[in-house]
Image: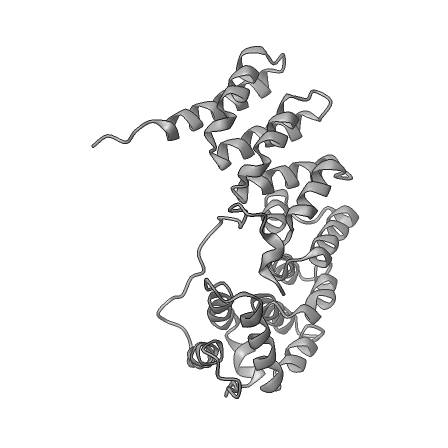
Length: 283
């Protein structure tokens, strides 16, 4: 998967949280980490000397080291390809995909976590099925894994699952869109969101991505009374999260003149936050 599908020349990568790499990781995770480093260093013959069962037995630690390797600066398309080939060469790829259909919910959850961390593109359809899994823990991991996979297919699957059942919490949908969607996807969702809920999630995703190129459209939404109030409130919140000083005047106008009290309060809160960021720090 090409991570550049999320780049528009600005810092649109979501600033959500760093990948934890705790010191108490398992032996399996340690071996995966070492071999990944070898493969990314250019060793085309590297093989993971760990079984799928060992990886699935400690999915959080294993997924953590894989995710850290995939997210490493400079890895790029070639690095992702090397990781995919490493999984195939080590005969782990098919076993992990098969585990997504396991009758054991624990295995389904573990496999989704690892496949999402490794961004195995073939797993997208399988993981999308798990968004409607009867087990709520599997559903939660499936949503997170689709977000990690990213791309148009992942966004479509997230939208389909949410519109069908409305089972994805709004904050999780916004975080997932911030991770998974390209700039083109976000723009399309903001222009034709399909529902108020999707519009709110897309607008909040712009904030989570620190997308300064969306400041002007977000101000337009915040000022446009044709949008539902919740979408306009989300736009104010997103502008505050982005923190770009260019939004200050537009937010101040909302604070002074908008007839909706909740919008005025949200705009004032966002405006204060921008001004606070602009103040010099005391020495």
